Image 1: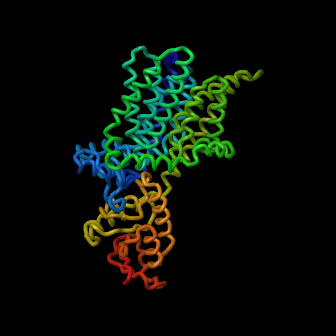
Image 2: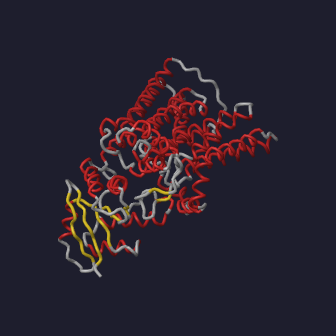
Image 3: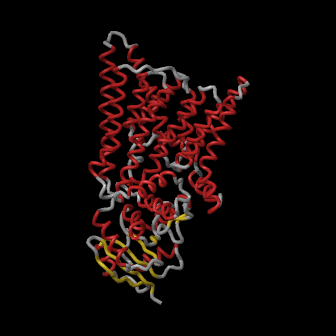
Length: 514
């Protein structure tokens, strides 16, 4: 990445940045005016339960999370976001869905401001900085996965990844060796924020180490190698309470298994990218702009930025990470595009540039707006107020013994929140099972199968494929599903009975006959 040149903001520069921040804040908070704080915005139940377990455990890292898997779900997830949520819950006792809905967009807004400093460090052009910041403010992968309740970890991970990358470049330009400890601290915070930020920060560290080794071989300068060592040591020390505790409780295999499960076809991703022109999770128009930025960076010899982008492109699943390099590349690309427009003869270049830029702004704002509205309208992860109250009543009724198992039939929002609200063990929950990848796949298949059958025999047979010793299971589903089970007479192996009907949901029991 290029050496930083001082950028002196003028009125237009400040005004453009202000508008960029304002638009970015609007995209990250608009949903709060629609959803409010009475229901969760797309999951968040598991994260809430993690925070509750942290409080119950005296703010020591718990061994497991109850209710989300028989015997408890291993607490291997990077815990920093849940500690912050736990502290807020402990100190202020807000409404249950306030922290769930407010914290992710809060950290996403902070990421927007942090990205400005990174863009200034990487791009030595005011127009490029504005273009990069505006891109980061509206590109869907920079906010859609970070503002949902289930995006708390991704939101914090984005913030600390940006700050880690910025402080690496900042320390590079300083003479004092001890300043390398600061990016080391942010490396540790990345490790404790989210699985994606762990992955990305390690790859960024390896890339920086490679550049430092090349610099040493070329110039015999050990400054950067010493810096890499200090960064690594500081990062390990800061994150030690997390990884050492998890390894002590569950062994190193819990990290290795999760990593290998996601990376079996790591390098097969690039041919697919090239074939489909789908380098970032966004519309084809964003991908074309990204590729133009990549080409512009190559022409302008921003080689380290290109490597930065390619390295992060390797990361599976965590598509939000690419919002950082993509925005920087698009910033570089916009500068190059304006340079090309300037070369067109016999045309008023200023009018042409203004027309092109405003057309692009309007088009991409509309594209991102549709993405945001789709995210808000999509009900796959929703749970209604009525369903929440029904689950609370299930818990209060004590009709389900604490040591008995439950299956939940419904959308992912109902499945994910049921364990936390009912405080009962839900055996078909797949959330949080990334650390047990085989079980995660089985539970996703189990939940999808349950939605397609109302036959007690088939349900019990499907359950026993994963849980052989279960002969009795309670079932939570909407009343229509419960009624269909009541009228099902396809077999005699399993017997269903309705226990209780609530406003929307029903509670039943399936038992295998001897």
